[in-house]
Amino acid sequence: MHITTVCLHPEMVLDAFKGGVCGRALEAGVASLRCVNPRDFAAGPHRSVDDRPYGGGPGMVLSPEPLLAAVRAARAGAPGGAPVIFLTPQGGRFTQRRARELAAGPGMVLVAGRYEGIDERAVELEADEELSLGDFVLSGGELAACAVIDAVVRLLPGALGDDRSAEEESFSVGLLDFPQYTRPAVVEDREAPEVLLSGDHEQVRTWRLKQSLGRTWARRPELLSGRDLDERESRLLAEFQAEYDIKIRDAKDDQPH
Image (cartoon, rainbow, N blue to C red; front, side):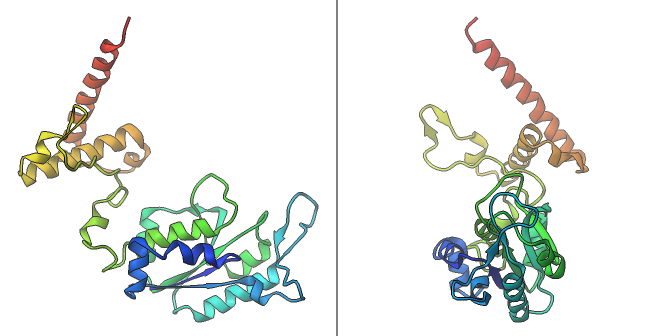
């Protein structure tokens, strides 16, 4: 996979992948990463890439000419079929499903904004897609680009030590992840679930599915709204809900009156 980021601060992106899972994947050639800086395409001695917004208002807007030149250079160097994705607050929500779709492709060009935004004409002329990480504000799109790159690269074959890891993580099957435990078995009077120490792999898989369903119901119920649960999943979720209600009642009973 070939990944290009168009951004004003390439060091923020490149330095983010000097270590860790994705850093090792890049070193191993699982994916390649390069950055294109719009400032390299700006005219004038100061190589200015921003200007005041038409209509007035605070801050500056990323100028269209150097940005368009940078995006087009990035697109020309990308493999055919690699989408140009502008990271903007107006974009569709980036999800694990979209990460899997991008991981199945030949590459991507991520365009990171700065200042008060990007001249809309650059978006209209070159964006194949707009993506947003969520309803919050960042100082620039470089961090958003890093998040997208990390989410995609770790899904590529060979990126993780065990490819099954990506299949069992939160959102990979539309559910939150189950709770994880490791040694020691007891930490400050809190014991790891006995089923995980049993050695019965089928019971462990059942427990984990039940916890994933229950956690999703309790913490992110909207993820279950469009999911058709089969008979086994419905039964496990009902068991979790009954146990959850008992736990809540017990917690209330233990409170001082």
